[in-house]
Every structure is written in structure tokens, then in C-alpha cells.
Image (cartoon, rainbow over all chains, first blue to last red; front, side, top):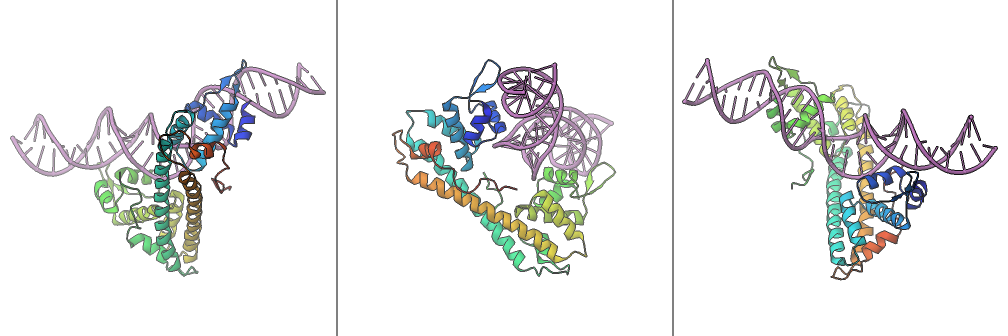
Length: 139
Length: 139
DNA sequence: GATTGACCTTCCCGTGACTGGAATCCCCAT
DNA sequence: ATGGGGATTCCAGTCACGGGAAGGTCAATC
């Protein structure tokens, strides 16, 4: 398969596939003319990667997942642990966003939104208290 | 005020403040020795920026907010519109994350998480359907 | 006056995960 | 041979900074 075909089948841009090769996530063969020659296994990996990415796993997490995927003697506990950690990160992000949402919604509610210049959103940003939770979790 | 003092008072890293000057968000004066000389107005703007950023506004949105903040003849409707658009983006992100969370939680629930290699998470990623909503909203 | 040491300055590189574009090469059909 | 649609590489840019080097400045101490 050439790159265009895999791209369509895996639902990823060709650019992304080249990038994944560059960082060592896949290793397609090469034809005599220099074109990448993808096997079914490459397509499977790319599809896997696309799904993992769409669930928000980082590239490095994807690399780990892919290693587990390929390791016939893995323990499912390892996969589950990785997934649970990621679930935790998702939950954290949701909480952060909800806190922003709450603060901002308050400000918006209190703003008349007319032709006059008085605006509680601006004064709130200028002198209000700092949002909510810590913007970025302290390590 | 020197940069360290403003940094502490505004709650921003000095690096960030230099960056904000570089991209034209603030224009502090300069002392004879080349040091930045911050006025109270600079501090106010930086504080404003820090809060807006912590609510998730992008730099360009912050630039727009700052312009409104400084424009005595603004209409509060303009500010409100900007804030509401941002609220919409926050809500979208939350929905995306919740969809990921739901899908991934399902997978995690179905995984035994023991020493055996069988793992519904991996098979789900390899052959499952594509997550949920579109990962990235089409523009 | 010399030497600390804590500031400040600029400059350049790196991050994550790509995306866009230029220049070049290859294959196939007319 | 010419054209068009592939493919390849490499370089630069994105966003919002952070790290660190190399060097100038300030205040205080010896």
C-alpha cells in the first residue's frame, strides 16, 4: 500500500503518518523507488494509533500502548493502569474547565451587554480573585 | 518597578512578562540602564492578563479583551460577546472530554486487569469504532 | 577599589503534535 | 515528450511559553 491508501484507510493525514514514522511509532518498508510500502500490520498500528490519539492519549502514551499491543505476553493490568491514569488526567481537565466555566459564566451573567461601557467582566478580570483551582496542577 | 517585583505582584513568571512585551501586549518604559521600568498601569494590565489566561482565553482573545479594557468608550456588549464565544469553546471542550471519558471508562470497566494478556482495551482500540464526536471541531 | 552575589538584559533552542509549502523525483497515459 | 497526479525530503511555522548561556548592573561588604 502507498501512503495515500493507508491514510484513507486509517483515517489519518499522510503528513501525520510520515511524522509517526519519523518518531519511530511505525517502520514501514520501502519499495525500490523509495516509496513507503505499508503492510497490513502497519495499517493496523496506524488505526490503533488514530483511535488512541482520539481518546486523548499523548504520543508517548501511545508508544507505550503500542508496545503492549505488540507484546503477546503483556499483562492486561499494565494496560488498565495506563488507561486509568489517563482517565484521571481527563477528569482533571474536565474539572479545570468546569471551574473556568463557572467563573466566567458568573461574570457573563452579571454583564448587561448593552451599548454602555460599564462591564463587570472587565472589572472582574482586573480586580477579581484568581479564578478557581490552580490553573495547572503543581507537580 | 523592576520585573521581579511585577512578576511577584502579578503572579506571572518574569519570562512570561518579557514575552508579553515582545508580542506587544504591554509596553513598559525603560530605565537609563536598560532595565524595564513598570508603571502601575503595566502591573494592572499584567494582572488582568494573568486572570484572563487562567480563564482559558487565548493570547489573541486577551489582546482583544485588553483593547476593550483600555477603551473607555467600549460597549459592554462587545465584551460579553467575546466572553460568550469563549464560554462556548469551553463547553465544547468539556463535551469532547466527556465523550473520551465515557468511551475509555467503558473499555477500562471491561478489562480484567490481571496477569493475563487478554485485554479489551487493546482490542477495542485496534478494532473498535472511532471514539465519539469529532476529535477536533471542523472550522 | 575590588569583589561578591543578586539582579537584569538579549539571544537562541526546545517543547507537542502536527501542518503548510517548496523543490524535486517517479509513474503512467496520451 | 508531455502532462498530471502521485511520492519524497527538508524547512518553517504554530501556541505560549521555559531553560539556559553570555554578558551588563547594582548595592553592599571587605
